Length: 192
Image 1 (cartoon, rainbow, N blue to C red):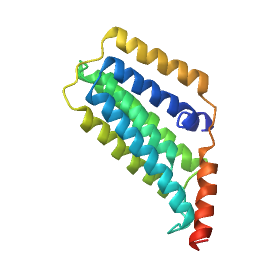
Image 2: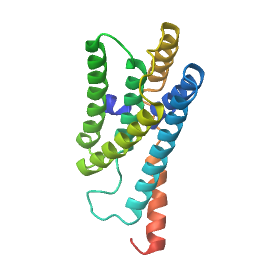
Image 3: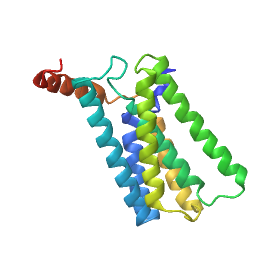
C-alpha cells in the first residue's frame, strides 16, 4: 500500500506538474498551458487553505486534513490521461487509458484511508477538489485538441518515467508544515 500511496506524494507530483507545464508551453502553447497553470494554482491554494483552516478550527474530528495525495493525483494523472488520449483512435485505446488512470487514482485515494493517513471524509474532500481542478483544466484547455504526435509523446512519456523512477518513495512532508500553521492559527483564533 505504501508503494501505491507514494505515487501521490508531492515529491513526485510537483515535478510532474512542472514537466507537464513546460511540455504544454512547448508542444501546445496557448490555452492548454494556461489551463494547466490555473488548475494547478487553484488546486494547490485550495488544498493548503483547507488543510490550514480545518486544522485550526475543524468542524468535526473526522475532517481535519483533506487528502492532498488524492486531489493532486486526480489533477496530474487525470491531466496526463487527457493530454495523452486526446484525439486518439481507436476508442478502446481512450477507454483503456482513461480506465488505467482512474484505477491508479482510486488506488492512491483508497491507500490514504487504508494506511490511516486520512479518514474517508478527508479522501472525499480530496476527490472533490481534484475533480474541480481537473475540470478547470479540461474546460480552459478546450475540446477538439489534436492527438499528441510521436516526438511529443516520447518527450512527455520519457520525462514522466524518469520522474516516477527517480522520485518514487521520496516525501516532501508538506503536511507537517501546514498542520503546525493551522494549530498556530487555531490557538490565535481561540478554536483550540
